[in-house]
Amino acid sequence: EDYILVRFSDPLRPAQNLAGLIWSPEVKELRFAIQNNTVRVYATTRFPLEIALNVEQGILHVAGAGLEQGAVTRVTFGTIAPAVRLPGSGPLPSDS
Image (tube, rainbow, N blue to C red; front, side, top):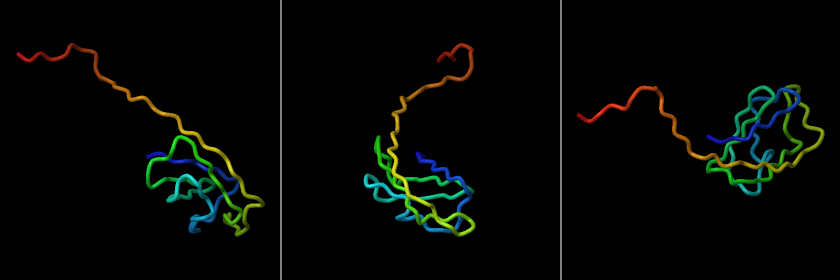
């Protein structure tokens, strides 16, 4: 599952609701997983190839203080070509 990893300098308060604090105009419904100083941002559908990600000041770190300022960044996803991997090095079995 695709996600955007947002890294903060301090550990975040784990139980906070990030809806509206991390958002994108291109993706209406986002889900979040907070772990220490990182947030994984998931979309309920596939991310478009490029989005603007907004991080607002109201996000709290474990001591209760919020961010000094918000941020906006563009995130670009590359396309991944399908790949095939055939394990083993022996001959293929015959249909005898």
